[in-house]
Image (spheres, rainbow, N blue to C red):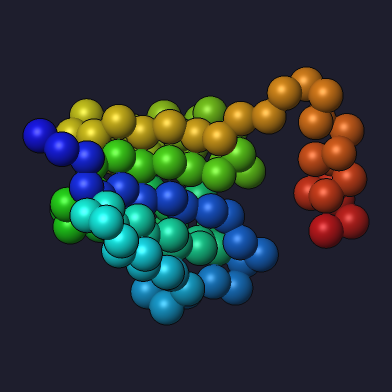
Length: 103
């Protein structure tokens, strides 16, 4: 089996419509679908949709955390690998500035 389709899901600002706020890049035999979601629950639903549509792997942005990665993995029932972007410890203070309470 060749790798030809995957999805990336990222957490937006809470106003996203996953049906509209998405991009598809289909080049060289690889289809990438990027979807913005308003909350973690929407990420679970979108991941299932993407896998049902043929995605062979799902990647989640680092804003979700390991619990949501596990929820998505359970929701797709082991059909595809599910991963999450991680940051090194040196990035934690910078992430706090970006995504802290003042957001």
